[in-house]
Image 1 (tube, rainbow, N blue to C red):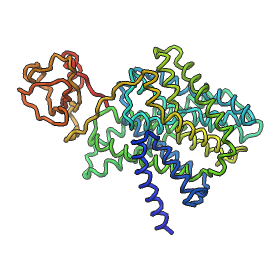
Image 2: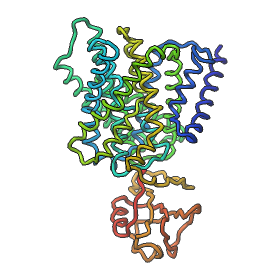
Image 3: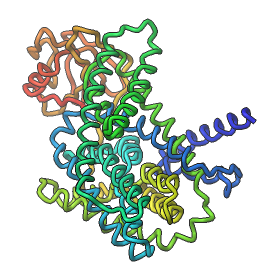
Image 4: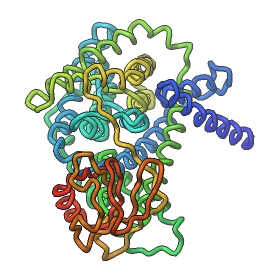
Length: 488
């Protein structure tokens, strides 16, 4: 029995990895293929695996989202996020509320739900999904003009706490006859955000301290340490009454924007872990769904999905960014990238576990909405960027034949930059550039070749340089020589 389960899990995992190749080739979002595999393996599919455990699904989903958010935070560049912090936080709070309100009105009319039940559905589908947005924007190498990409990634990483809070609160209201909204709910939300942010920041700093100071005898223990810290941060934030999702995402940002031992290998580890839990989460969600029940909600699901994509999400974006500097086209694109993914489906298991009336209907509608969103929006993100003229060529992220592991007391960073055609350094030897003594050009990537430079090496347009130095010094030198720093 155990061997059969292990074999089945391994086959599904391998098929999911192979499905990612289909995603790369044909532009179908990988998460949609993972869901499809789960549905095919389920009780209504060819696999015939009977699975109907919302509580286990919720546990797997919540744990997976924690690791996905931490990995997303690790790969979030604070320098790029800081200018869009205000707009991103407004989108992740006010935008979620507006979206939830618009879906509520539609659900009352389309599904004939009570106002509180409709509000629950609106809350569940109100947030964009970090796994979906990170996957679509990062795996396809989509380049966006200005600050659109950090805005969308910040929003998707920070709006889950609002959706979770609304969902849990509405379940409590529906579970208590005669209950209703109260002023204390606002205080609870502010408390969750504040406590989650404080714990995320402090334990992110503690994670950095432990990684850099413990000097573990085995390199393989460092991934175990950071993985354990993610679980610790999530658990402490939840027990302290804070938002655990906000805590782990913020901790990831804190850690990822500092230098630490084995940085590249640890980031790769958490990226791989994020993919593993995504596969596990989407397969589990696919197994939980009974496809035979979806046709009954197809008509109402299409209306809800259409209203969410064409009315609710655009209203949330345009009203939230009313006083921002984003153009109409940029706001339209932000509205189109309101991808729904695993997070709404995981949240839809909460009413099932709580035994809320109409929970089955809500879950099936949410699943259908997510399928529609991923299939329609996820496959057309690149097309939308080109039509709205917000796309730009993506900088090539090279793989270099070396790795830099910072140690205590060394303030220098290994930073990549490019030499544009207009740079005054083009055609000049390195020794002629007047570089500071503390700045070392370690490697030059030219076309498909790597050059170990000397003082007499002359720079060419398009050269990619790996430089070891203090970032502030490099920023001053880059400004003088017209170099462009390649941010991660």
